[in-house]
Image (cartoon, rainbow, N blue to C red; front, side):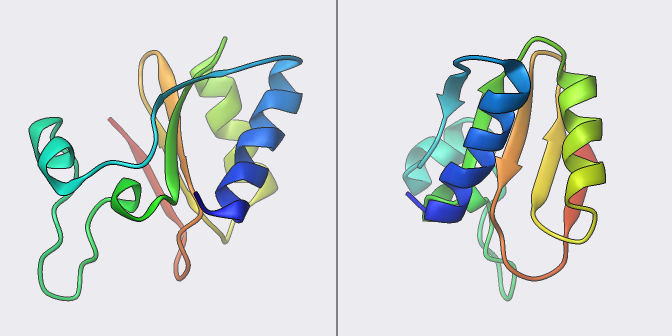
Length: 100
């Protein structure tokens, strides 16, 4: 796993005040496709999960954690907001934000 990703997970753990559950980390292409992850195409590398640079974390308040991460790292990384979890990734290049 990517060390920068582990640092992001630690930021979330600290914000939560304790352990967080990782529901998805590094994925093989077959599993990534099965769960609907972004597929590599052309210049698009696809899901950061394929490269060990992403984790989906169950947190107590996904909207609050997502908002905090977006404020703390406005120009870096990838953050996604879902009903029960947040996606964090340590992608290089432009920041990415989405709600799913």
